[in-house]
Image 1 (spheres, rainbow, N blue to C red):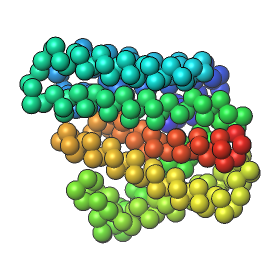
Image 2: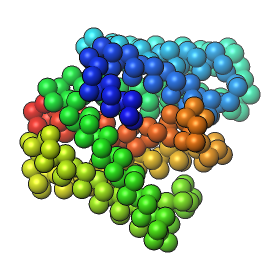
Image 3: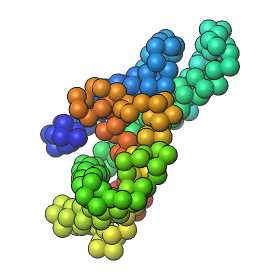
Image 4: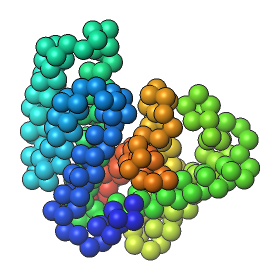
Length: 255
């Protein structure tokens, strides 16, 4: 996140998009390793390359090519699994995982490109980063201090209801701080609603990634960030938050 903040503040859209493409590429590699391990190496690399292509398409304002790109990818991966036959009873799981990755990461993270292109796009991205970090911090410290009731034991046993509520409070607080500093277009009531909305979707994004990890029986999505797990562990809340912010900024505030 600090690197993303620096790039937002000082990099032009082209450099920002290049950085985002790198993040997406390595996130897709991590995602597919998470679910497929060392199996289907060819398919994993092709999926990472295909998914990353979404970023330049959006940067050069060719979203109409997304439909043929994803259609072609589905056909190619279907044929690869058909003729490079793995354990036949696992085809639906493995092919489904590849396809999920092509939707989950490129389409959600890809919203950052049109969001960055909006007149106040940088500010809206800053808002999202600050709110998500505030939500996570409030939830973590309050949850550790007074958390007793489990939020969703089967998916994320360390999260508590008390921490989740504190995360919502932290999100509202962050939006109101941003409103009073660099996004005055947000009204007070709007700020409270926006804080609640981002707090909810951010925590849902975190829980969804936890669900994927539990399904794969791992604690972290990867080890690329020492002491903090993988890229997906850092992006999980943001993946759900960025699309929400884009549509709010674009259509709610005439971005």
